[in-house]
Every structure is written in C-alpha cells, then in structure tokens.
Length: 227
Ligand code: SF4
Image (cartoon, rainbow, N blue to C red; front, side):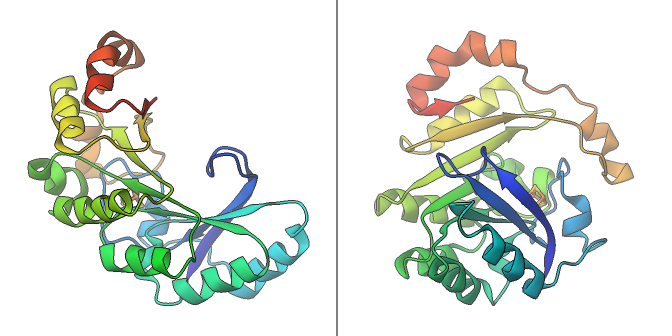
C-alpha cells in the first residue's frame, strides 16, 4: 500500500468510534472539487507502512477504530492483508470508497475485514463524467446495491458540488431505494484545484437554507437523510 498521511484522532469519521484516519495515495476518479488533490496526484508526503503500524501499536488502548480513506483505498492490492492485521490488533475498521471497485468491497465485507463502509455517490449517471472524469455511476450503484442487499453497516455520501441544482439532488435521491443513512456534505472550496476547473468551482452550490426549505420533500425520497 502507498500511504500519504495520518490523521491521529477523529470523532467524526467513524460513527460512534474514536478512530484515526489513514490516507492512501492515488484515485481512479478526478472530482473537480476534490480536497485531496495532492494525494490523488501522488504528490507530497509518503508515509512508511512500518510507521503506521508503530503508531497503531502505541494507540492500541487509546483508539477503537481505524478509517482507511484516500485517494481510493481499493486500488491497493495490499488492502485485505492490511485490514486483517489491523483487526488482529483489536481495532474496528471503516473503509471510505468511491464505489468504483464493487468486487473488492464485496470481498472485504464477506471476509469480515470491515465494520463500516462509506460510499460516495457523486452525481446523476449522465453527470458523472463532468463531475469526476469517468462514467462511474453504474459501478458505484452496484457497490451500494450489494451493501444494501446484505444489510451491511454503511452509509452513502454526496457532496453538494457547485452547479448541482436542488432538482438534480431530488432526482439522485429518488434513483436509489431508501438507504440506511445518506449524508449530504456542503461544498467547501478546495485549497488545490486544476486551473481549468475554476469556472465550475465558481458556480453556486446548494446552501443550507435551500436544503432546509426542501427537507420534507428530500426526506420523502430518502427518510434517513442527514445533513
Ligand atoms: S473520489 Fe474522492 S479522492 Fe478521488 S478524486 Fe473524488 S473526491 Fe478526490
């Protein structure tokens, strides 16, 4: 695995679990609003896996969970083995993924290597390429369908990216059966972005007051919507 960073403590990333967050480098999507541009372009810090295990060893009695985030963790061949070792140390594990590798998520879940999964649903099928460079909707939908069908502990997440309209959000929420938890994240301007994406980044995004105004309608489509 190639690691790009460690967040030593988080109370927010793994629901109900005090955890650390480990960031893998590289991604198979290229979302214009990505907040981890250095990670996805493989620039900057590389953290040795030995250092990660030394850190986890010291935190064994202080943390309960480990979140593996990115970039996109499922691109790394060593992920099953890494998760196995982390679970043997007594940690709960959570995977953050863009859902582009349904078979890998399936394998990890079936091997009991995960306690919780968060999958990003980026946009409507026809907008995926514009938003993240790849027509990836079907793969993500397949991953979500698998987790939903087997009753896994999981959530889906959508960033209210600039230019997305409330009608598009409604259409996206209606596309899926009721999810266990669907989290909406408000857009925040990333520190690093590609120059060509600035025009898109400058577009208006859905605000908190627009979500509040439309919440009853949105929650009819997805009752477990969390903002
Ligand atoms: S999937 Fe996540 S890490 Fe990859 S480009 Fe999109 S926002 Fe960035």
